[in-house]
Length: 107
Length: 124
Image (cartoon, rainbow over the protein chains, first blue to last red):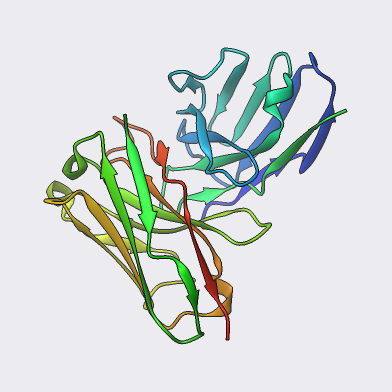
């Protein structure tokens, strides 16, 4: 199975800050990586697919980059409504695997 | 609008069975693979099962933790995916999400739409 190592596990930042989360795959997954946002009591919401493509309707302050084994997710200017847990997920091969999540809080 | 609605969750004793349903609308169900993903209370996300479209054989894949106990199926005429869960264990307690999946990752990403989830509690 492909292991996804996501960091940090938690993050505290101020409104307007630039926030970065990283995800490392245990083997080459090309571009086949999703980033999700999950708010408490809600289903995950797809934000970024194919490592860098913004899902329709998602604000442009969210972005993703990377390929192969190393990936980055960025919020360019943190907003209060961005408080959530974020997950990366590879779909290069089954079983699909997720990072352990990054809980984002407002400082 | 793509919609996926799970049903069938509830409280069940260890060793018993439960069948989850995922009723879909807003897209051509037969053109998409489907997956189930679960989340134990306070924990992360775990992929559970996947079923291909008929042109790709309609075959299924399972996580090691559920293989031999769970069975995924689909009814393309009704737009419904199912997850039959047998020999349930306390470790199966989780919210179960139904997800639209891709028949081909080169064309479409996986898990692009999720239902709201249904809670399964396995306890005596």
